[in-house]
Image (tube, rainbow, N blue to C red):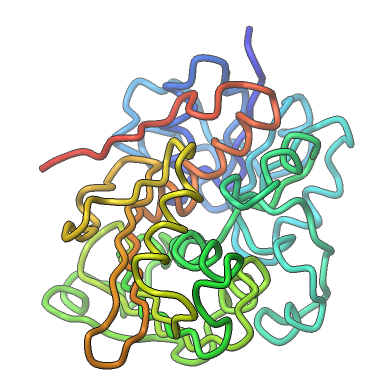
Amino acid sequence: MGIRVAVAGASGYAGGELLRLIAGHPEFDLVAATAHSQTGAPVSAVHPQLVGLDRVLGATEPATLADADLVFLALPHGQSAALAAALPTTTKVVDLGADHRLRDAAAWTRYYGGAHAGAWAYGLPELPGQRAVIADASRVAATGCYAVATILALAPLVAAGAVSPDDVVVVAASGTSGAGKSPKVGLLGSEVMGDLSPYKVGAHQHVPEIKQATGAATLSFTPVLAPMPRGILATVTAWPIASASDARAVLTEAYADAAFVHMLPEGVWPHTAATLGSNSCHLQVTTDVDSGRVIVVSAIDNLGKGAAGQAVQCANIMFDLPEVSGLSVYGVAP
């Protein structure tokens, strides 16, 4: 038997994607999958794409998860901390929720409310030095979906002094799976199809996470709900300190050895369909001919690099496995 893995919150979209990735992972063996309202249901009844995965969803309780070497927490924000604290200290945990991402307790209170549970190792391996931090950690906080699309586009440029950390503007469109699986009127097909709609304008919870990871000083972020199941396209703009060619060189060098982050050839722009089903991020950069601002466009699968894929990538590092194990660099088309 390989590494014994459990998934809490397995009935949701991110949980289902975790189950799919674990089923194809050469070293992971699923020993438990839990849910709340779907407790007792067969996995294939909740996730028809996983027919043949012979497991019943158990209750989300420490006892159900404690026998695993690794636990993925795919729970709503605010529900991970108490469960993680009740697990054995020898159990490695990757939390897909927000509970342990932020170092600043005031930022947590402002954007999420409630008590701050403390920060874990931040689960974005492509940040400088972060692979070593993740490798040494037993508890890792995976990124937010909008956050990773923005951070990968922006962080190297701020760090290299290629763009100003002030007045960063981000507009990002996401598929509806980013809002979770709970039924909501605004996510009904009849409401979403043929429509684009902004939400949480000027107050999205991923803002402090993006600032923490990139060094951005001021950030205006507008999320947009797009009529597609999955994918994120983020447009990140900032004032240049160097030229656009310098910005391209910085991003190219930053991700030269990154299996999952790809700077596209000049003139080729990212689109979400190209990242579907993968753990990849596609990037392109240019300079606005009118304003002079640097523009970076980033595309990811929000359930891949933005959630389950990123979590598996971190788990691979935690267990000293090849970083790409069980993950695809390539998207699915059409």
